Picture (cartoon, rainbow, N blue to C red):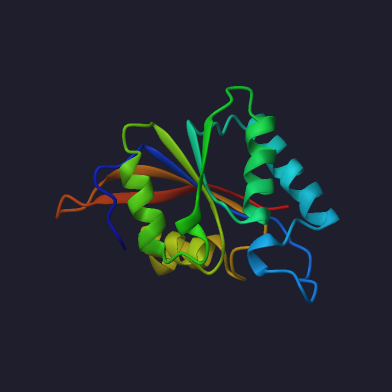
Length: 169
């Protein structure tokens, strides 16, 4: 497990929704959401709102598919969290996401909208293998959202995280 210090009380890990297959001249970074991806992103954003999962800030990859997924959440949430797009989140390792969360520890809750394998590996690092395997036995699906809450500290003073909810289309 990994540490985030300082840390917010809640973390949302939102994997971007399904993207179109790339055209021969299309850069991967520019791939938009597919029709199913748009529908799933909108549905997941609505579920976040209905279940009162309201991040204070959304930190998203600046890749088109993540921008569109984050935008769906931004539009659906009444509180209108602030939203930042971060180039370094494209093909990011978990440490990049963890550092960004720590950089926003002054917030009660932070949403990361990113890519696999980084999102999946971040969840694994924060909650450990057992909780990860219970939560995502078949991997972290597109448009999936893991809701993690700070659940205290280990004997070493490191924060522990529990999966409060896992939402998938």
